[in-house]
Structure formats: structure tokens, C-alpha cells
Image (cartoon, rainbow, N blue to C red):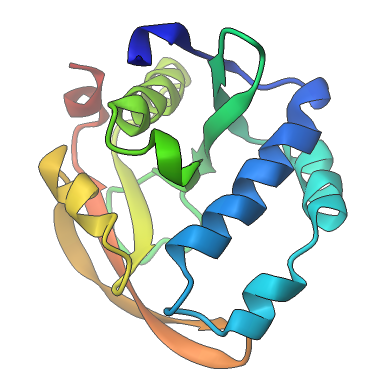
Length: 174
């Protein structure tokens, strides 16, 4: 099944489908973690506008079926918070529709982002994940080392995030 999924750089024409994956993934991944009211209020249109703006700015790859349907995406770029010395890049987001998870797509998306970051001269990478998100086990399985925790406000509530890091981005290219 993953052979029928192509990983490629996103274009402006992908913004609508990226927005749909973003909203739908949040609703399945974070239901029971963040307030339902926040999830229910998420808008495809608002996310599409955000992604139209972000596509030219970020490194952004999509996972696409043969029929052109986008089933996942990952984005990254410069590390934003500079809390951990030596980590110069970051995966900002990785979302895959629930029914396409656990098929190797996440690993392929992370690899594509890491490869582009490496080409641009970045050496180390980190990603933040909500502590209550089971996806944290994915980052551990692909070699991410827990760096620490921080608080994040979502929908008026505080949540704990965990940073996972790779001191050598090339570890993700294998």
C-alpha cells in the first residue's frame, strides 16, 4: 500500500488538501486531549489560507495517493525556540490521516524533510510533540532522544510538550 503513496514537495495547488489533512488529523489525534470546542471550531478555509502562506516559506512535503489525494504532510525549517544548543532545524508539523497511519508514510515524510534540511546545511533536528499524543512513540522508534519538556497553551489550556532530537540529521536519511 505504501508503494502507491508518492512523497513530493508541496505546491500552492496542494493547500486545500493539506488543510483538510491538518484539520481531520487534529480531530482524530487530539480528541480527548485538547478541548472538543477547539477541534470542532477548526476551519478548512482558515487552514487553507495559512498553508497557502506557508508553502513558499517552509520545507513542505506531502504524501499523495496515485489518484492525487493527499493523505499526509510534513513541514520543517529553522529551529524556532533555540532552547537546545546545537539543534538548528525543526520539524514543525507532521500529520497523516488516521486510516493511513502505521504504514511507513510518517517515516518517509520525516526522511524527505530531513533530506532537504541536510541539503540546506542543517546538522541537527528536533520536533515537539504533546505528551499525551501516542505519536511520541513513533519519534522514539526512529531514534529521537528525549530532550526535555515545555508548556504550550492550546485553546486556553496548558499542555506539556516533549522535544525529541537527533544530533545528526543524517540518522534520519537511512
